[in-house]
Image (cartoon, rainbow, N blue to C red; front, top):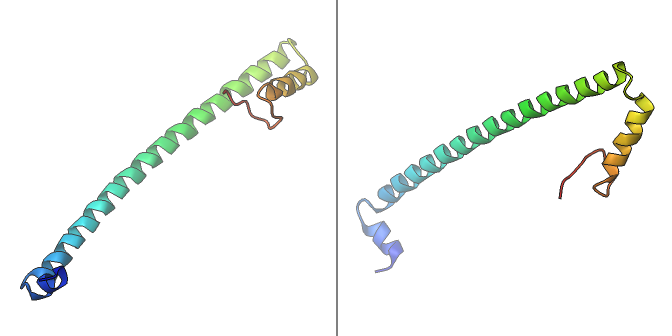
Length: 96
């Protein structure tokens, strides 16, 4: 007897298969939902950390300028030099 014949001949075959598939689909949907919530939480944590870093950097730059430790032109020159340290003038510093 083939599997198809078994499923079609068995009194609970197709209904049992449908219930099993529904249960598996529900379990997968729950797992996906949990992963999505975790990723959403991780993304929010990264956004918060980035916002904090932006605040710190802006504060440092303003203090340097206000205290006369450098001019805006000097700051921009060093910024460009540091940007090039990773080999690309792309406004980012990527550590290798």
